Length: 126
Image (cartoon, rainbow, N blue to C red; front, side, top):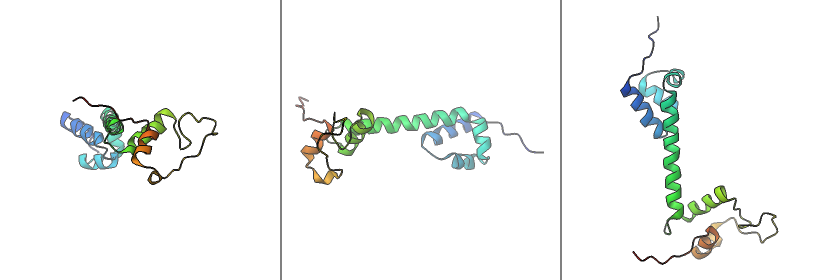
């Protein structure tokens, strides 16, 4: 006769922490010494919550990088492409009639990349 798995609070905490760190379910199951199917059956809410937490942390980091004037310009460009519909054709060129821009960021100066990403220098009175 098989032993029925009964989660305890410590195991639930472990699953939540490991899921929020992005560890795959098969690895989390191995830590608990249970089958992945058993993990999904008994820890569905912890797995979902952990996954959402991990995604939220990455989104926050991407946003911080995108708005940091000294941050990587690739983050700002990625944000504008995915959130604002920008493409290599340029902002607002929905018909594709504008000049084609290079896909290689090395073809541009830092200032040109900032302009493409919509970042302008602002006076800081800190």
